[in-house]
Amino acid sequence: MAEGLRADGVYEFGGFRLHAAQRRVTARADGRPIELTPKALDALHFLVRHPGELLDKSTLIAAVWPNVVVEENNLNQVVSALRRALGDGSGGRRFIVTVPGRGYQFVAPVREVQDETPATPTAATAPAARKSIAVLPFVNLTGDVAKDYFSDGMAEELIHMLARAPGLKVPSRTSSFSYKGRNVDVRQIARDLQVDFVLEGSVRSAGERIRVTVQLIDGTTGFHLWSENYDRQFGDVFKLQDELARAILTTLRLTLDGQASAHTRQEPPTRDIEAYHLYLRAEALQAVAVSGSAYPDALRMLEEALARDPSFARARNAIASLRAIALVLDVPLPGTLADTERDVLRNLSAESKLASTHAALGVIYAAQGRWVPAHQQFEQAIASDDGDPLTYQNYGLHLLGSTGFLHRYLDAALNAHRLAPAWTVSHINLAVSHLLIDDAQAAERHASMCISLGMPQAVQPLPDVRCQVALRAGRFAEARDIIVAGLPPQMGDSAGIEAVRKLIAALESGTDAAAATHALDAVRRRLEPGAWSQIMKRRFIVWYTQLGALDQAFEVTTQALDHYSHSGTIGTAWCFLWMREMLPFRQDDRFQALCRRMALFDFWQQNGPPDHCELHEGKLVCR
Image (cartoon, rainbow, N blue to C red):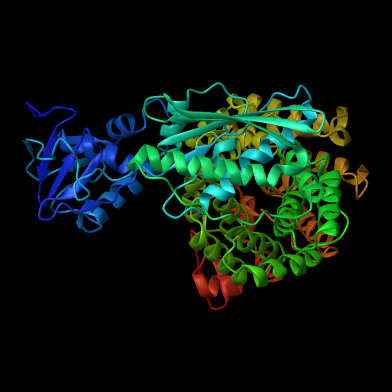
């Protein structure tokens, strides 16, 4: 570190001044504030205090994200944002220089100066107001676990209401709720989500009355700024939520600049309180049912909510999301995606900029093989709200991964993780996307993180990711045990287990592929068509391809597509086709017809070919 540069000093470099203690950057000429995210400020602070030093990426990551596992791409994005804010261009010349393969270097001269900010800040010199708050899931103190949905709903509605306040950044439900049930210091949560304040709450009930307690916490110090109790009737929940939002905004403004804030009453998501309760209960069921067993009940509740209030937009979007996940998990649900599409389109006519509606349509269109409009809908969703990790998750899984845009899939997964670092789903998405780009170490790291965060080891696609990682590392016995432990009951008998043993033995020795193929054929023949899931079919496609049995691999793929066609879809989450183990499958002439059946060529002609492939004379050539 350069001598004499204090951690809380004021530094000048180029045409800028960094006020470290106040966490702000200004232009030297006119004092104009330079907008930076909290992490960009952290990175700039560290770079400025080490002028001229070549800092490797691991050192910078440890400084900006202490005690948090993040990907190198997060640092790259922060550095890019810094360069844009400082007008340094994409490659860096005046301030931050990239040294390929080594790290970054802050090359501008830095000097420490006296803070010229007056002791009593004026309107022109006052620090930029902190304007971000995370709303954590409220604690259910009713004594009835079945009422968790209501306490969660209180927090979710406050997120929706506060997010509409001009200039206030509010992380999404997915980001905040990933901390539910975890004992994490509120200051760490604030750092993870890059917010200034955190709102906690609890709900108690007695008969038809509820008591809601809320407290606003400074995310930097952990000190309580304000708390209040509210006693109301259950039927007054919407009025209570509006009152809470008004009190929170007023307190934030008084804390920040000593002025009260006007709050315009917002319309509730529905006027029917029972429809609202049905929606909340369905969302709670979907959140805990990792296997999809409760999806039919959740769908019934959402449809009941819509029957009570046909204008309930959130219920429609929730149905679209539920159906998409059910497709991935192969959970049969009554009705079709086409039915849901018609309903979701009604949401657009009412509010065209509703990000969740665009994202829902993106999922629907991708499952129908309408890749170009799906891509457009996801882009519109992100343009409307780039702070929802679920949108990035769906964009990567359902579209980018399925179409072979593997590095862009990874970028989407990284964005989801950036917005929700504690979300288990973001880690499994990162595990899959890293596996696809051949970074097995990162894939294994994120798979292990899923387990440490509580994901059951048999939940797909976790066992398949772990199996492929073990196979690539030559840990064949481990790969075999992972597969056997995750076999469904229909295949978990002695014949199924023996088929898996022969498969792994053939992959390890490079011989006896015919015997392993024959064993898999025998298992497949005795399974009833409806007795084995689409997930198992995908496993067989990969296994057959690894054994060189491409006839069987294409036969099972055709069966899977035939199954989906009955519901007017092509399925979803086809990213496994782009694994390196599937290269022989992609290089077979039959893959061309498969891609045409999945309507992929129109998308590639508009957006370019998938990674490691090229379009040549109307064919996809993969290497």
